Amino acid sequence: MTRRATRRFFSTDAASLARGLLGAALVRTLDSGEVLRATIVETEAYVGVRDRASHAFGGRRTPRNESMYARPGTLYVYFTYGMHHCANIVCGAPGEPVAVLLRALEPIDGIELMRSNRGSGSARGPIPDRMLCRGPGNLCRAMAIDRSLDGIDLGGGAGSAVSVEISRRSPIERASIARGPRIGLGDVGSWKDRPLRFWVRGSPFVSGRTSRVTNGPRSV
DNA sequence: CATCAGATCTGCT
DNA sequence: GCAGATCTGATGG
Image 1 (cartoon, rainbow, N blue to C red):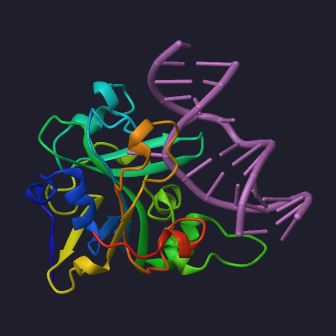
Image 2: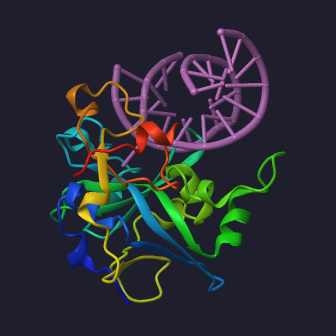
């Protein structure tokens, strides 16, 4: 039993949404009608203009990050390193550039299409399921998310390209959620160590170099 | 395992 | 020009 997340669900602070998204499903409906569905297992919170690691630090506003300033439930997709797309869900108060980065998903439906979206893999054979949506760039590729979806409203009417499904049945136990510092940040002072990354403890779908280090204990 | 170069877009200096 | 909310394949211990 699931329901679709509405604007109300996204209208909260970034850390709360980052936690609350764990266990929810990200649903991508393609133009063809095919559906890709995956459980969110890892997120990062970018808490607003005071967050030195955020694209919106100090109130910075550019063509790229414009949708961060849109209403809660807006999808913010950016392109980085000349190669990768990353997907965020805008939250917080209306007009505040607050968002949650999606870092890893556990594939549920449309797995073969995800694999195909990722490319044919390498000489070592097809990409294993646990790698399909591991990391913010990889999950965008698998789920066919790019800048053309930047700014869409996840809380809008039915049939939109991307939405979030919340399950009442199996919410993630608080004790099964781990948190730690965010990944890949440059010199952002004390913000580097803030525990704003959240993940499902022990999930083999979570990103990070070694699952032992990144997947260890430490509850919320 | 750990480290590193390279892919080459976007925004700031 | 250079660094960045990344990822992959290559190389060396």
